[in-house]
Length: 91
Image 1 (cartoon, rainbow, N blue to C red):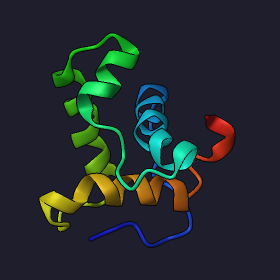
Image 2 (cartoon, rainbow, N blue to C red; image 1 turned 120 degrees about the vertical axis):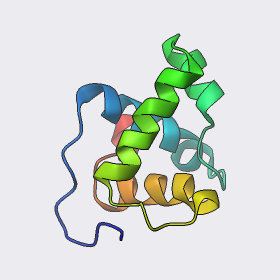
Image 3 (spheres, rainbow, N blue to C red; image 1 turned 135 degrees about the vertical axis):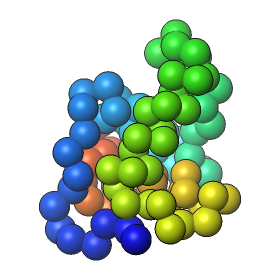
């Protein structure tokens, strides 16, 4: 099930920062894919496991449990933008 309502799910400040970093390559340079865990971890000087944990929680908050694993990351990024959680102004 994916989030279909107009209201975005509640996210913490740390999760929002991860979403901004996840979406940045797509909004800033038109990249087809969101940032990987290693790139995000390096940006925040955190472990990839910490980023992975944030991403997993975000999958739950955005209702992506039924999305194929290979598509979850891109769907999370797309929903974050579509629902206004992240915008170009955040870059």
